[in-house]
Structures are given as C-alpha cells and as structure tokens.
Image (tube, rainbow, N blue to C red):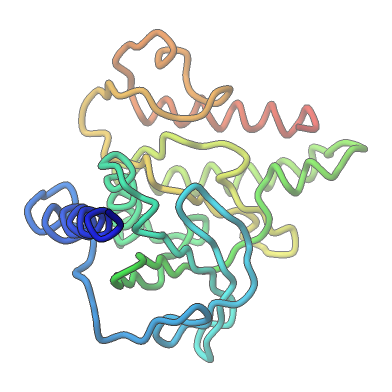
Length: 243
C-alpha cells in the first residue's frame, strides 16, 4: 500500500513541477529541475541554511549569507506540501514578477536566485527588517507622525514603481511590508504571490480581510492599481491606530 502511495505522490510531483511548467505558459517562471546541485538539510548549493526566520503553510524561511551577499533570506518551499495548482501559480507569479527588471527598486524585495531541486524550490532574496505588524505592534505608546511620514513616502514610491509597469500587488498589508528604521530606504514590499499585470479589469477575489477594496467584497470587477492604493490607505490607518 505504501509503495502505491509513494508512486502516486511521485507521479503527482512530476505532473506539478515538471510536466505543467514545461507546457503551461502561465507557469513558465518555474525553473527547470536541477539534479547537479548539492542539497542537504543545512545548505543548498553555495547557500547555507542558517537560522529559521519563520514558517508558512508549505515553506520555511531561513537566514543565509555568502561572501558576496552577507544578508540573505531563503524561502524553502516543500514540493510535497504544495499540492494544488493555485499555489503553484502563486509561486510562478512571485518569481515572474520579482525577476522583471522593470520593478527593481530599493523598496521592492530583491530576488537573488531561484533553485529547483527534487524536493524543494528555493527563493533566495535579500534580507529585510521586521514586518510592519511585528515592529509597530511592540510600540504600545503609539507611533508618531514623524515616524510614519517617511515610511509611507517610501512605500508609495515603491508602489509607484510597480504601477508604472502595470503590476498590481493585490495583497498589501502590514505583514507584507518590511521596515528597517536604521535603513535610509526604510521599507520593502514582499510576497508577490498574488501580483499580476493590470492590463484590464480584474475579477478574481484575493487579498486579506481588512485591506482589500470594497468592490472585491461585492464580487465586482475592479482596477488592481486602485485596489492597491486602498490597501496602503488601510495600512496607514492601522499603523496610526497602533495596530
């Protein structure tokens, strides 16, 4: 019985990660499988997997460092846990968006490398600060406008870069904005799994409760760029209200 289950799991893995990306244009950002790169529980290729930064539904995020890039983060996506096509499209969308030179900006998380092994997809990125929820949640005495003003200026500038290239993020919320108070660039937008080109009206319902635009609740078509603006307004209100 176990042998049959293992065979089914292996066939499903090949379908999801090899067959479909080779044939579906919407999954073309998924890189080809490599079997030559060394992969251990503590490293993949030249990248060490150091401290755990966090856990997701199907991924673990580690700190990492190399001589060239001492401040990296690696999202290790477990292919056995990611079993649905919707999630696969989100991974492809994130890779495709962050690989586009048009949106390279200090306020957008930099994608350094993507590695596809038999067990994992690794997204190697620069390492940012804490997310807004984590940082401002600790400030029970409130947050001053002098702190908020430059933060939201930088957030708006980063979002403008996305929108100039017709990308809409579609999941802007405090957890998806990294904040480094000691860094002159202050913020970085992360998590591009729902990012898409806003070439026409959008219809799919996505985002996070409390931060998506009202027209999504009404299941109406919507302008993704305007929906992003609504979302950062909600973030501003949330931060000013001490989260």
